[in-house]
Image (tube, rainbow, N blue to C red):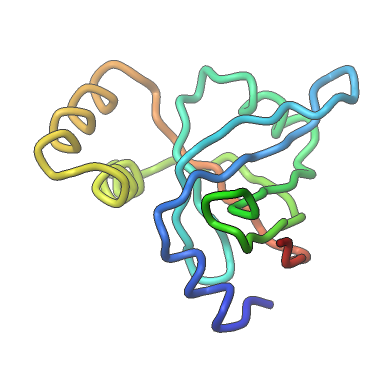
Length: 132
């Protein structure tokens, strides 16, 4: 599904925008961190956020990365999201170090691990569209 150009692009620590559907049928779009995991995209989240409940009710989603004035080219992914546990806080740690310097990441990992109910959203890609 993902060609080498898309895989290379996903290695960049950019901000993605995840859109899920709320109970009234409207898009609920939020900016977030992400990381590639094989043919999937993984997102960390606090279990108490609205998007987690929306995904449980309707897993269809889209994910937009780049395509703005700063990055130029970008991609729109369509697929389905699945809420999953993050055993040992592996993704919390990996993703925080991906986006933050070590000193700040160490602090944030400890804070989020002990004060939030962190989990992951696994985005299963069904289609990819290059946007400019």
